[in-house]
Amino acid sequence: MLKNRLMNLCAAIFLLFMMGSTLVDRADAHRVMVFAYLEGEKVHVEGYFADGKKARDSLVEVFAKDGAKVLEGRTDENGLFTFPAPALPAIRIVLTASMGHRVECILDGAGDTLVPGGIKKETSGAALPSAEGAVIEDRIRAIVSEELDRKLAPLAREVALLRERRTSLADIIGGIGYIVGLAGLFMYFKVRGKEG
Amino acid sequence: MHISEGICSPPVLAAGMFLAVAGVAYGTKKIETENIPKVGVLSSAFFVVSLIHIPVGPAGVHLVLNGLMGLLLGWAAFPAIMIALLLQGVLFQYGGITSLGVNTVNMALPAVLCYYLFRGLVKSGDIRRIAIAGFACGFLSLMLSIAAVVLTLLLTERGFLVAAQVILAVHVPVMVIEGLITAFALLFLRKAKPEIIEVGVC
Image (cartoon, rainbow over all chains, first blue to last red):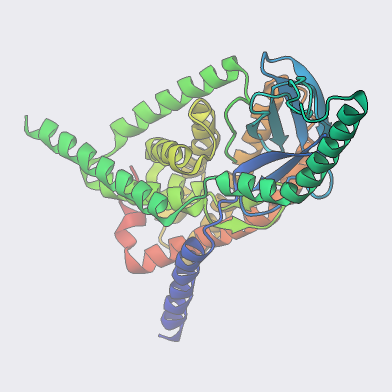
């Protein structure tokens, strides 16, 4: 009798644990995510498993738009890999983590190359016609751009993180619904097949 | 556990898909009408259980429950696992669509193997035997699945320098947890719905 009670208790605790961990800890452990952002002339790449664990010592490969490999490296202790931005309009970053996890993302320079000023734009600074004026303007431009990059880097990181799609409860319930539906459909055809 | 898109070479993907389709066809054929709900329920369990994450090892691991599925479903584990993996791929971006076949085989084949190894012990109905079989089944099926994943990665000739022993050693705690959960689940079923483990093996 006592043994039965104990068994029931164990089973109940087990079921609660299962349900609790499903609903509370919805972090999907088995997916790797990568995001990249520019800071000045450097590209930062961060690899994460979706539960927030850093993807350490993972292979990072950087490709040009045409598929040519630009460079490769490995993430450090914090899942971070930094490299100088290549003078390309866009790069594709592929991260390969352990146990066959792989993910990629694209970093786009939005018309310009990733290195600021890689494509020379016509300066509209007509107010400073002299050569000296142009030099000063260039310096101001560089300082502002550097400052902006520094200030915006955390924001760029946040945006990159937010863009990641996370598993929602709706996904989970939807998936179970699909399985129930498929089982029902299968049953229907099986029974009909028997009758016919 | 879930191999992503673009990791395996096309021959490996094709072989995986071929084996998976064969397994699914055979498994589907063996499902009795009255067992369909059971297949559905276990497929759902497999679908959800991957979200329970255990912080071990470099990649973070999760329960698989393929041992339990093998014991309760036999060959029907193939269709149950494939459908759950497909939905995980579409909804959670786990694994991938092209690697669906490889992933199905890696998880379902050990399940079927464990079914043949341990069904005798489970059918006996003896509480101790069921507990032992459950633990061994959960442990072994996960171990074989991990070995299969490592093997698949080595097959792709992309110079994956994976130390197989290290990966297996890292996963030992998960295998133990998986074994315990499989054993508990079986003991619970023996008490609550004994017909599921006594008769219903497809």
